[in-house]
Length: 371
Image 1 (cartoon, one colour):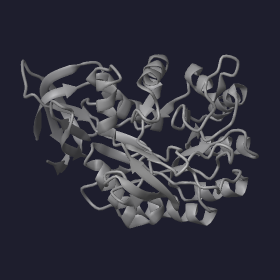
Image 2: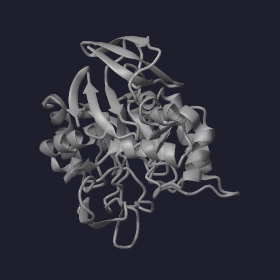
Image 3: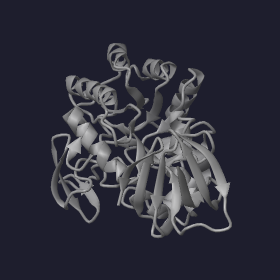
């Protein structure tokens, strides 16, 4: 099968044809000119709670529903994400993600695994997380790892047992993401070093949100992540969570270590008005989700919108913006078979029009969505 258009590579846009064979890209052939449609590598969302009225905590059917919704916005690899809840509920959600993986219906994105966001977070930096934070004791960490489905864990490094938990997750290949934390710079820097020393990969959960800010005499965990050569960081770029100028600063400093996520909740894709997050009442209004006290409560972002924001208000070129939703998250998650368009890689692709709206999605070379 051949697919012709403006091929978005990591460093340029190439008029050409992609030849697909099975699940892979067999060849990339340049052309003098090609149709005015953009072909991008499929988007990868490593932090997504819900969408289309469904939530990861609701079980297998809901996980499939939210995954299918985000597929229509270009997401071809997804990590359903838990919320802070009583431990039995968290374990049930992890088992549901594992079951959803085993019995995934055709025509959806790849369920890479789960992002365990909570309950190993600070009770003093919950953000919109419900008040069920607990320390990551060795027994609980072992239970989470036994599910075989955790790929990313959000963890506050100041918690009791955090040091041994970070090492255990890192040795198991789980990405350790510092977040929902009151840790200072020194504590965050030590955590980064600890994860790396254990052979792990370290990052930060929704950079700038649910963590201390950068101050002149208190640089905080944001500075530790930005200054580390090894630290990756998620960002929710809906322009509510992070100002465009702050995004430009982080992108300039972190380069390919910065990646977009949605942190989308169940109301994503639904009309504005009342909704729910982790059993809490929230209100969707003017493109943002908030608790009654005004606290941001996840988002209603999709990755195609994040990409458009990076171009229209973030000042990025399309190849630069594309890296934030594909190559950079692939590197963070260790997915070396996707995230770029190149011969031999997976044919997970998104076709967009001139306004950067999704027109067609391919997963493993098969068309799974078309407008």
